[in-house]
Image 1 (cartoon, helix red, strand yellow):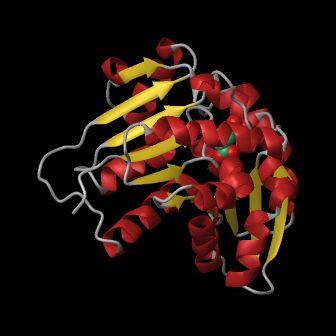
Image 2 (spheres, rainbow, N blue to C red):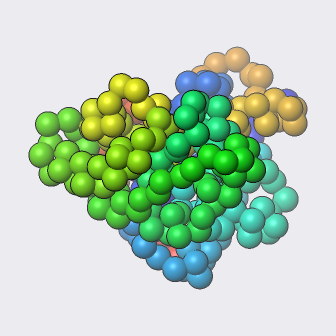
Length: 271
Ligand code: DGL
């Protein structure tokens, strides 16, 4: 039994896809979320900068004495997971392994589509994980740099012509390759699930990396005896590095609860 909070971070809103699932699966756990909204997007940045930002994000979350940290960001998971794990004595979870496991189980024809940020696609991390779990599976990958800014600006609803056009351009080659499973390799993308799902069609399984990661974290905490078994609802706190208002409005819509009183702005460069 461990009542310390779970730390979660992403470059912005995307990690809320993991928070929503963590809260659903483990309602009694306290969660502390950091969204680096002042520096989003991460996806086009170099490895050096990403490691620097990720270290600061972790250093900030560690001020809450968390029992574990979830990297709810495909970009940081594919680029800096090993560095962060080596530097920290608490468990650090990334999204790649659980997503690859889900895709390996879901695909029937062995053709997997993968979309992510430039940094995630460049890393080859999802391909490596899948090759180990499902040898012979083919992966058609596509970097989608315009999707994160669309999500951060609230442009992810079905009927949004810009969102639908951009999704169609990115996903047409992935669909043409015959993928029956699509890894949404960036935690921002599940907010666009209705638009992405409509383009890919009902025969294609969508793997939400935040959701898969949350399930994996629950299992790991149980195995390690780190769950909080205290009855009652956990507290969810949110920190951002830019305006509280924009984040609060979109986060409240996405999480289906008013988070406004629990969001605070911090200076991440101080960590
Ligand atoms: N949501 C993050 C990811 O999964 C970061 C996206 C970005 O900031 O570019 O990759």
